[in-house]
Image (cartoon, rainbow, N blue to C red; front, side, top):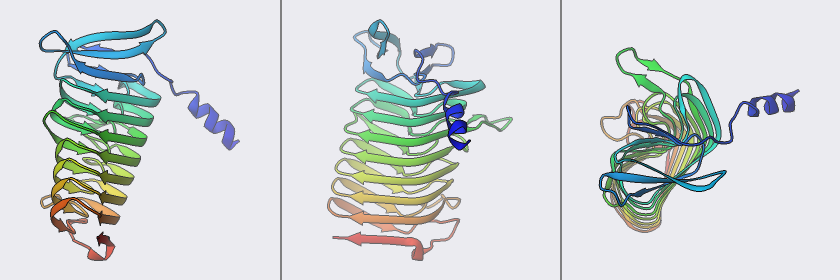
Length: 278
């Protein structure tokens, strides 16, 4: 019965659909289709490349979109097995590996090879829609893989978990090989993240924190290179609502100016922090 139940649940997931651009809101929904984003030869525009049954196609849209690896779940749940976003160049407002509103993505992958960002990068979805009515939809992503190889400017903030709202995220893996990030968070903006593993090989990061205002079970960062100004096992100052169960910090190489316990539910619990410096 358990296997039949799982099969039945998976049957409700779409493998992928063709990307959809909403010109009124400036949102691009990849709908589970792998997309590659590059600056267009036309000024102020982006080229979105994707594979359809007719071969590779290009959709040209204005710069500064909000990109979702999943779909639009405002009027009903949208579920996809995978999402895959690659940014090579151009100006982006925001990226979400998951969906907008109610929906689930099994595995969300984001690769940053260049580009500039107005808001940032979010591994999970966006479940918080209306600030006035405080509507929060059910949004989840099972696994998140984010690779930052390079940026053309500083990414203001990168969340491994969900962005706006109280979504849920399972396993997060982030590799920073270059580029510049202002704030790097293993978990989400709010919501819950099970585990995060961050590896910094190179690049510049002003501040790393395992969690922001939400909760994370286990967080781990391994620093093998690059430059980091501040590293917190929990939430940075001002993020007293951040909570974690276990946080590990390993500094193998690179340059780190400050390491602190940070906040864990408003209290810095040093007993839950494990760190090594070589």
